[in-house]
Image (cartoon, rainbow, N blue to C red; front, side):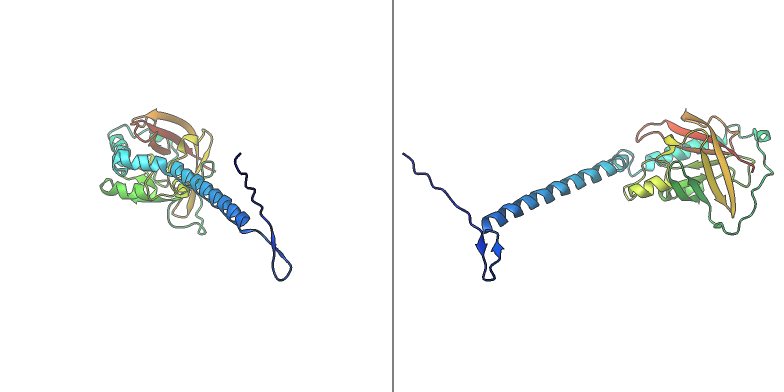
Length: 237
């Protein structure tokens, strides 16, 4: 008959008469806490990977975003040769009142999608630098004040590895697909606030409506040549 050994664990009293936890229990509790900490760390890392996966894939598949930037720029360049007119449908004389409390720099704000950013000005020679900052006002087109041509704004959806999730939401067109018809877009331009209402949208490889006062666009996903376009009219209030 095999011998059975029974171990007993006792709590100890120190010199002050206070009970102390037996070392065996202390080791067991410490082991549990370490496992919990490791589990929480793993979950945190997983969330980070999920958050940055779009940017990582964007960078890998498009060599740092340059390919997609080229697509965005080519869309604008092709538009130059298109029919830009239809100016008769625009009120080109209206200007909002001057508000000296507004900043001199150009700002874009879309409350419904969380965009709140400065517009980056650049020619086609350095559009990549503008897109790295966020939203690019396409050169050779109109401005909020000069509406002989549409104002065209382009931006990445997923951006670059150096972008944080908050930066992506506020400074790019990550949520442009969620911009609904009827939504309001604000642009501060030379201390005047221009308000636009989205009235139409489209998907494809080219702008289809040059009667719009404001056109916003981005790529649909990481590798697709399809772009998402939103068209807006200036509100004269």
